[in-house]
Every structure is written in structure tokens, then in C-alpha cells.
Image (cartoon, rainbow over all chains, first blue to last red; front, side, top):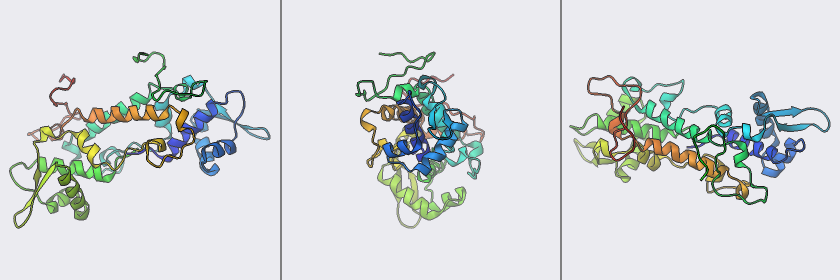
Length: 153
Length: 153
């Protein structure tokens, strides 16, 4: 089970930009920092711009920056936006040819599991993914999204 | 985000066999019923046999049957067994070259989401996936795995 490289790189791109809030970042520097192709990142930047997560400043001295504060960018929302589909099994996709779909309960069970997956990601914002200012990071991020039922320990 | 075809077909194969508890099933009939290639199903049958979900009876009149009662086959356990990997993002895989892994909290968040996904599937058994005896099925299966915290409405 995998997310696409597109989603993986989109999250890394957003994390990089979030760590440089005081200036515009360039695709070239993100590509260099993460050893990802610029072509790939340009496509991802375009998608993130269209969906309202990134702002692009054109021209000399231009670059990219977050369109919202890191705390307002939920990981689940980004994954929903960038991942091309969530057809975990054939019956969840548009091209479903499964012959038992009508009387089968698998679709609902898999759909519920997907909701649990995305629901977990909704508890975290981009701000929760960033390393602490000192450079160290705990292995597990603590969700800080307001209004959620998650309590800090 | 997708599960492999292997896992999708494995679940359908188990569901088919579970619906014929009074006799041995053949790979040919499952292939015909689901319009899946026999070659693909033979490979899946072998894996399910090795992992203790299916029993194979060789020779004339042979076939396959469940190695356990449907209620004792948890969907989450089958998915864990059959899916080749759960490398949702690069940092969850063995070939991780991400340059920010050390100070990054994404790994833990994605891992938590994966646990939520599989934990949901653990609440359902193969018996929960089958159509009701009358042929109709509700869109959402009700978990019946004993000892879980899930309550029937």
C-alpha cells in the first residue's frame, strides 16, 4: 500500500517552505535539498498553487511561499488534494468490474479504513511535522489542531 | 493510494470460498466467477496457503477450502499478510534516501495513520464481509469480532 511519489514530495516541499517563513524559496533549492528532480517539483508546485496551499511570485527574485500559516494546513487535506485516487480495491474506483459488488460488504469496510487513515492525518497540521527549533524532533508528533478531540499527554 | 491487485483478489478469493463451506472450490471456478486469470489466482492461493488461510487438497476432485472459520479470519490480518509493503512514503521503506528523516515528524504521523487503517480492518472478519443469507447486504458491515470495543447499534 503506497501513496504516490507526488504526495510524498508535496509534503516534503511544503515542509521545506514552512521552515523558511522569512523569504521566498525556489524550486531549485528544494530540488537540491531533497535530491528530487526540478521537473517533478514544478508539477507539484503547480498543483499546490492551484489548490491554495502555495503562492508563487513570478519574475526575478521570485519563488514560492505558503499561502496559509503552517498550523492551518492539515496533512489530511493536502493528501486528499494531491493523491490522484483512493481506489484501494477495484470496487472503490470508477472502473469497477467486480461481479460481487452488489451483495458485498468489503467496499464499506475498506472505505471505513480509509476514513480512519485520513481522519488520523486530519489531526495534524504542517506545523506539527516540523523539527523543533533546537533541531531535535520526537519520533511521534503531537497533534495540535484546534477543536479536535486529541489531547496532549 | 492503492492496495495491490494481489490483496484485492486475495480478499475476493477468500470471500468466494467462504460462501461455499460445504465443498472444495477450484481455482478455475473462482477465476470464472470473478473474471480473474487463473495464473494470478494460483499465485495468490499459494500465498494464502503458506500463511495458513487456505487449505489445498491435491489430486482428482481436489480444490481449496478455508483453513479456519470465516469468523476467525480478520481482514486486517489478511491484508498485513498479503500486501507486499506499506511504504506509504519513502521514509517508511528500506530504501529511504530522504534527507530530512532524522529531524522529521512525518514518518510517525503517516505510521499512525497506517495503524488506524489496519486497526479498522482488524475489527472485521471474513464472516462480516459475506452477503446475508437472503442475498441482500447492507452497505456497511457491522463488526462482530469478539473482544473488540465496537458495539452493534
